[in-house]
Amino acid sequence: MSLRVEKQKPVSSPPPLQFYSRQLEEQTAQKEIPQPDFDDLVTEDDEPVDNIFSEKQQRLLTESLYNSWQPKPEGRCFLTLANVGLFYAIDKPPLVPDVLVSLDAKLPKNLWKTHNRSYFVSEYGKPPEVAIEIVSNLKGKEAGSKWQDYAKAGVRYYVIFDPERRLKEGVLRVYELHGKTFVEKPNWWLKGVGLGLTLWKGRYEDKVEEWLRWCDKNGGLILTGEEKADEVEWEKEKAKWEKEQALQQTEQERRQKQQAQQRAEQAQQQAEQAQQQAEQERWEKQQAQQRAESLAAKLRALGIDPDKL
Image (cartoon, rainbow, N blue to C red; front, side, top):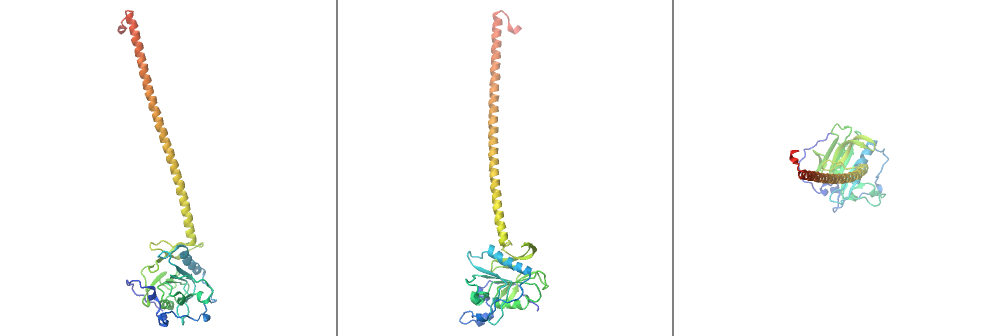
């Protein structure tokens, strides 16, 4: 089906509860989200796993957040999951986003209980803020029924990543929920979450592709565990190099100071030698003059005028 995208209008960010789906509100009794019958629910199936690219892409998006991201304010918890069922209504099948992000959510202690195996809105008390779908074929209906279902589920940001352009649209489209429908954003910044998305051509797990990455407001990548470790190692090497440079600089300055002191001492010695030489010459001149005067006196005593010699 065709997808009509409305123009973005500036609106203030409503509180998370306003993003609950209308269907959930209609089913709510006494302001409590209805509990499904967990005994009859199927949280896993035997469908084939995703293709290799999607599997790596999912891991890239989830592990980078856990390794290098902290939502504000400091200490705020979050949850990001890959390929896990999103149960948002009792009478509706679950959605299975490739990646979801939910703020102020924690994993339960016992993950083996049926109601803890998937993301149940009734258990977490809220829908996730972000749902990402990776297009690998035309059967997923990412721009069709899923687009509508995520809006009904109350997901604030819906992201379609289409690396092979199978939907004949852009590689990356980001939608924000306004009321009961999604509106395409002119940029890829998710203000309500404090995260951005970007396309990055690079190597991840020895595979060079154009990957979907999280980024901060300035476009800086949210690092993977390996990248963070490399950065820490680089910082260590940088600190070590800077320390060595500082030591070399200190040694060089010490040598220069020593050389300057040696030059000053040498100059002082030369000055003293020059003074001694001048005094020696003056003394020798005096001695020569005294000898000349003594000789002249002797000549005069003999009646000889030395000036006529």
